[in-house]
Image (cartoon, rainbow, N blue to C red; front, side, top):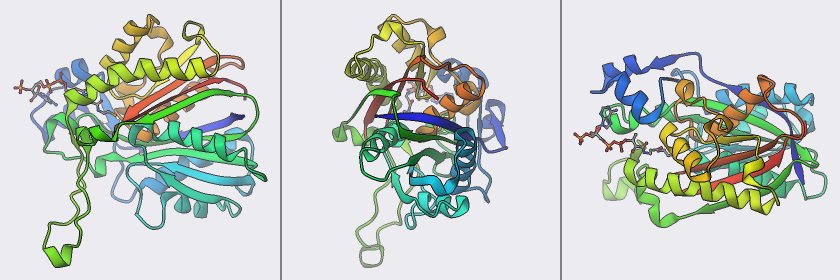
Length: 321
Ligand code: COA
């Protein structure tokens, strides 16, 4: 039993339009818009890292929830682009918030990270002495993007979104899943066994993607995951008020709308302004709806994500803030 009592988000100030992407690779605004729905994305500067974005989103979520940082029992940061391997990004956020009573954990389920974070938070809230849990999705994907690869670099953007959870009635059903056999569809390099001993090249961190394979996976799993989460919560997909899908590609969302026979108006879309912000995407979208007063208590909402791993997941909840 868990409910969301506050949300926040942060997008770096610097915006890169499709027109500007034409400077990096052989592409056009028209190609990007028609194939993906993306018009621009935010890009972190060299002095902005994952912890900075996560902190800004977290501070806004705490304010929205009306609680203090010291009341947090746990901080979970979902990210594919941690600020460092040690310490975890969550510890950077804790230090800046002064959340002295919080345990800090990062998790990586690529673009499904925020959904996985909500699932872990819900489970943690069953433990004794858990007050409030902060779940953050934060990414600086442009720092691991290959700006010579036109099929990936136009897709990704940076940002962070956060939600504060506590015990209560809100989340009705969550499902998550993974298919590690499809790891090669979307990945970075792996660590060499020993750089010094073997002379292997250092960690190659840029993202590689088989766009067509990921697309095929996504158009199938988005509807299936959503149906499973809603069924787990004894809901009806045709009674949903809002669907907040991972913002990867407008065509994937349109395909899901058709397959589910649910009109596009029920799907929240902000991909044109953000691009794909991986683990941050659903959290940013949820906050945008909350800040725009688009969510009313009692609204039935599905959050649904998919991404590298390959991973997928969905949450069915009733808004109760
Ligand atoms: N600008 C212009 N042309 C581009 C381009 C770009 N940015 N990127 C690729 N192309 C070209 C290709 O080189 C190819 O040219 P060719 O026919 O001469 O070889 C052509 O466009 C078609 O490429 P294709 O890969 O078939 O395009 P597509 O319709 O499959 O769209 C994606 C590519 C990446 C937009 C699409 O596959 C996709 O969205 N996949 C899912 C990706 C995703 O969401 N990943 C994150 C999941 S969390």
